[in-house]
Image (cartoon, rainbow, N blue to C red; front, side, top):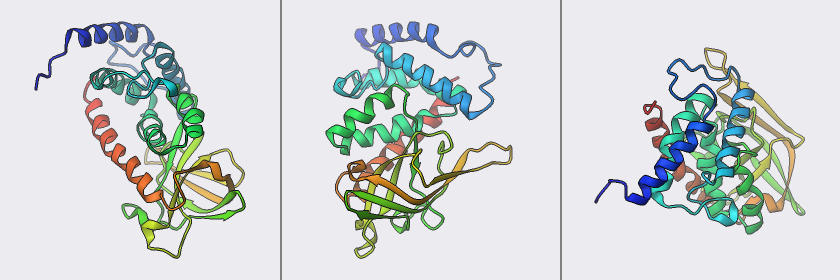
Length: 265
């Protein structure tokens, strides 16, 4: 296989690199002493600004359909943009793109209803929506099927009760991709469902977990009688395990790209 750029790919890279020189966060490019924003609110603002610029220029969601705000570009075009923006995301924005662009967006594209795709994908690709992930619990880390957070269906709503932990970005996120138990009477992995949850709903409490430097890198999320509409369920009731596997598949890919990106600056 030839890993060299084609002439078209070279032209795309040159054009994007030129755009990036004018649109990267101020003071970052060419400055090895760059100091990132001091808090998460500032990093979130920087992320939204940069992502909106990418979106407006047609460089966000390279591998997403145009109908949902993407560019319908090639695999190599996506690699070119990802390689160039990865260090920027991590060094200036705390990696805020990972869950939003790397986990939530591709999961919604794969499993979401048409309404969910139209509602969430464009504002996610443009940086308007920042996502967090509600998977792990005190007794369900790598064993996701062991989770206990419940969602009880009442009419056309679900009422959520429980706790999630080790959730990155929950303290500044707008929405959450959430896996909960909807049926306790079937084998564990068959009783799960997957939801998109507005983090501003009544009954949601976020407690930051600060690291040794005092940075709230992770969070606990508590749900107390949180009511979410049925149309925020992704897939059918009981599909949560299958939908979550899609998310986790992208998590492995994003994690490897993230690790590589940190060495590119």
